[in-house]
Structures are given as structure tokens and as C-alpha cells.
Image 1: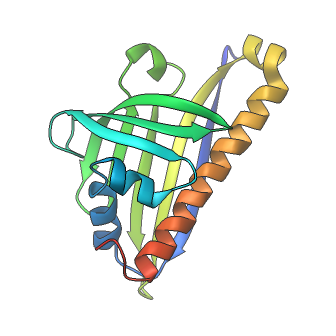
Image 2 (image 1 turned 90 degrees about the vertical axis):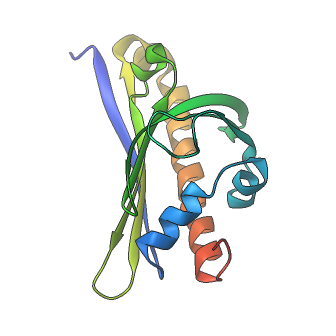
Length: 164
């Protein structure tokens, strides 16, 4: 039995826009107002603690509801590829052992549709799975729903012409 099970949650949505517009929207998330506008139901606060927003090595703080509980998160931007990808991970190296990273990927199709994929990876130990399996599954389902809602909200915002 493996000591840690790695699970990647992924959600992809097709949006009638360009990777440049999605990238501009994501990198425009620079404060509480813009962050809450993206997902009013769950997003609470956001601010940048170090560096320029959405630059490699920058540190951000965000508050959001996941599975009905308020989470206060610090994350570092680990990779940026202009108009195509942003990777980020928990600021805490300890937490990265269990949540190694998240990404936003933008890919243009030939027909003018852009695929936006959000993904996040977590690692769950066998003991945690054994002791709290139902709670873990419920939490994963809640996070997957949250990410799906973010994609749907992004689609509504960009296809309606807002945000840029």
C-alpha cells in the first residue's frame, strides 16, 4: 500500500474568448473586490503580501469558503507562462507536502473557443483515508464543485464582455 495517494482534481470549461482575455482576467485578481466578483458565493478577501501580483515568487493571501468552512490561505506563484499557464502552491513548504500545487491553463482551439482548465493536486495518507475517508471524499467533492463554479462564473463574465 502506498503511503500517500495523489489525487488531482481538474475542471475544464470551454469559453468563447481568447487565452489572452482569460489570462488578463486571472492576473487582474489583485484585491478583494476583483476576487469576490469572480465567485461572490465563496470568495471573501484577497491581497498581495510580497512582490507584484501574479509574478513568479509573489505571495498572496486569500480567504474563501470551501466545504462550508472559511479557509485563510497563503500561496506563492510558482510559474507563469504568458497567456497560457499560471501555477501556484501553498506558501508553507509543510503544506506543499499535502497540496503540491494548482494551475490555471488556457488553450485556444481552432474554432475560436478557449479551453480553461483549473486543477489542484492533494496527497492523502492511508491513515487519514482510513480514519476520515467519508469526510475526505465530501471535502474533495466540495472543492471540485467550487472550482467548477469558478469556471462557470469566468465563462459568464468573459462571454458577457465584463472583466476586460
